[in-house]
Figure 1 (cartoon, rainbow, N blue to C red):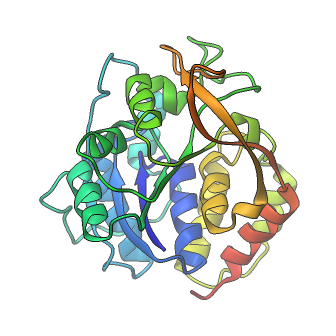
Figure 2 (cartoon, rainbow, N blue to C red; figure 1 turned 30 degrees about the vertical axis):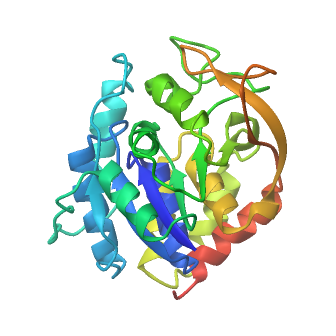
Length: 288
């Protein structure tokens, strides 16, 4: 598996990345995009995170700070909290991002391994849209974003989901790229609430590695649901999620709609939440 994690480095992104490392998934790189963190601060945090997990061999590339179109943004208080990574123990980063941009890194990686590189998108789709504009020969894109049958989660645009709302133009271009896409949206992640009971159970597990400890630290920072961790779990084991082929289009406010006029992709609709919880518990205890 050649997997690149494209992330805006929120707390659920951190948990998702730590899960991948704990479960010994070979991550080929981490690229950062503007969203809950600036890509520059997100890259610094990602480098520190990898340093703590003894995975400094994984390159980090900083990407686009602004949407392809428009000026949608997360609430400033969310950004301040995510950039500070309060509650997550991070060392002072010793490395630096690659000299190439995130989109260039994705494209170069895909060209080196045509049809073998998958991108796990945990934030707005700006970087991956720029990469597919360059013709990056990706195997697939798995993204956390969108809402088809579920309600949205953006107060200013009640039908929209945050990641697609930030850069709907990038989402539309990504969907139209011809690269196979699987969308793990609110229809699935709303089935994965972060309950106090599960958090307590996870914290009672003896962490087998730094990655497991990071997962435990991240649990206190979840915003109600396991958005990105569910998407990472799907990348590890697709059988956790029931998907259906649909034609999907993106509205201006970042809402995804099923309809004949859209692009064909796999859309997640149902989650085996019990097995997801088992995967999180296993990741915490893993010594990888």
